[in-house]
Image (cartoon, rainbow, N blue to C red; front, side, top):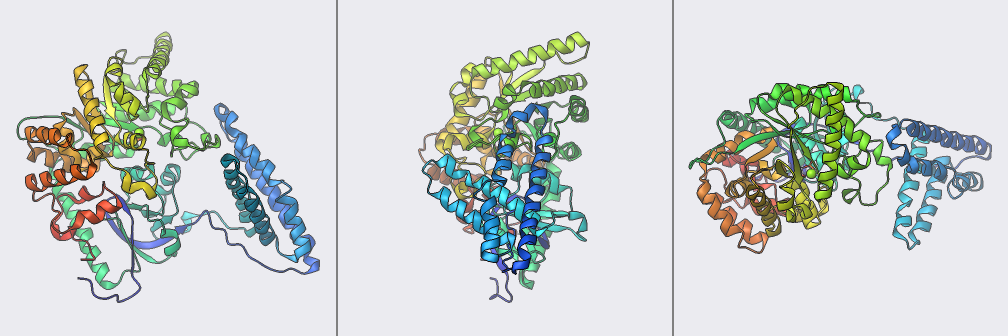
Amino acid sequence: MIPEKECDSITLKGIGASPGVVIGPAFLLDYHKVKIPKRQIEEVEIDHEKRRFINAVSEAENQIKQLISEIPKEFRKHSGIFKAHLLMLKDRMVYERTLRLISEEKINAEWALNIALDYVKALFEQVKDQYIRERVGDFEYVVRRVQKLLSGSPSVDFSQLEKPVILVAHDLSPADTVQMAKEKILAFVTDMGSRTSHTAILSRSLGFPAVVGLENATSSILSGETLIVDGLSGDVVINPNDYLLKHYIEKQEDYIQYRLDVIQYSNLPAETQDGFRFKIKANIEFLEEISFVISHGAEGIGLYRTEVMYLARKELPIEEELFLAYREVVERMSPFPTTIRTLDIGGDKLLSSVSQCHETNPALGLRAIRLCLKESSLFRIQLRAILRASAYGDVRILFPLVSGRLEIIQVKEHLEKTKYELQKEGVAFDEDIDIGIMIEVPSSVFLADVLAKEVDFFSIGTNDLIQYSLAIDRGNEYVAHLYEPLHPGVLRMVHRTIEAAHEAGIEAAVCGEMAGEPMYFPILIGMGVDELSMNALDIPKIKRLTRMSNQDRCSSLVRDLLEFSTAQEIRGYLLDFLTADFPEEFDYSQGLYPDFVGRDAMHVPLMTGMKKSVLKPVTE
Ligand code: PEP
Ligand code: MG
């Protein structure tokens, strides 16, 4: 029991997105809030104030023109949104109104501009057309840019930091995350996001503890305050008292000890007690992860997400750069196979250049294979690099977000043309390279028997399959509690896909986050999955659990689960199974899980294998 508050410790509840416990100073990254100074000015200052405003607008113009000039050729046609921003800068409603307010109201430029923005917002609110109404965000964007120039607010300079910090932000795009990771960062804390948002997945790959979906972190935390970030439970403690500090230091030590214990399972095969053997592979994004992947006992790379080389930079990578990176992964993983997924940009992962293509609903927009088929030169460069790397080891190509057979046919045409080109150039590659598709759209589940005839393997991307089948945005903290891997619809889809693959004689892998969550492994084993691919960190614990289980029991569990019609029934039955078969590993007796289920259904099992005392919520 925690003593009554001894100081102003506040605990915020979020979603543990990447495990680990750290303590350190907060650093608030606030792109969105620009302080607006409000000042009455003298008559004699009016001209000066107007000049300040005019100069700031022309500086903003230069910045935007510069951005447009940096858009790679292939994406120039998407520069329209920036061109619209240029027009908005000089729009009468903002530009002239601000100048008028400065002289008529005798107020400083920042204040005048803010009033002009409020006027525009009010006007837009009355517009019926939702699309036009939402364009007010663009006005806001350009006004904030000018406000920043007026107030001279510096962009964040991490090199000035003396010691590592915990980064607190409203939201971080995957590109921001990659960028920030190079700085002195201990952990990430964000208002937005869920466990399967790409930013959360990236933090796990980067090895930073992270808590996301806190909703009010940026309004509750001040830069410099001491924070405890518990990426296991999703708690963030602001200004911890001595009791809490002691508790979390113990938890930190226990977690480190737990990692040391579980890692001993790394080099054992993933085999159940009754002899069912499947492959455990790793999901990676960075070359730097390879040694970790090998030391954690991966039998190959099941998902090499290739977006990182395209993010957080202005120009696209050239073929040689991609080839060298792929070759390094392939050679270092040899003799194990490497599954390279082609570019899955779009949705919540945007290229700085592609992001100019404004989409109201990016998750359903020009994403992944659709973007590649449209921007075929970009696609072909990547295919060339992958094929060239296939001369150096066992490579498989995986195509994301395939929704039907036509896309596979188109993809194969590109692949054949690329092979032909390389042959003509006398460049070596694996002529029989295996190709697979990600099953992450419901239509491909229902067409699985048809699609299985076209490819060599399936890889089920449960993160997106859940998003698209339940219509739940995987990155949205407000619906994170509805993101339900145990939904009967989801389980049936996964089951059906594995069955269709087996009927066609091809393998089915699961590479979404479900694969590495201890709670779901008996289901996937029971369905007879051929491969699980996960963050390397999760491999030893899944191996340990697998070696304690019996596939026959898991299959009969699946038969029972498929009879239920609600996720609640499935969850209850599954928890009973886990508690009965793995009493030491899954302990829900302390009333722990309902609390977590409320926040994030995928959260519960993260701590599997840790001492029960460590599992106790701190508020008990
Ligand atoms: C998935 O959707 O499950 C998946 C593995 O792909 P990503 O998370 O990169 O979208
Ligand atoms: Mg996906």
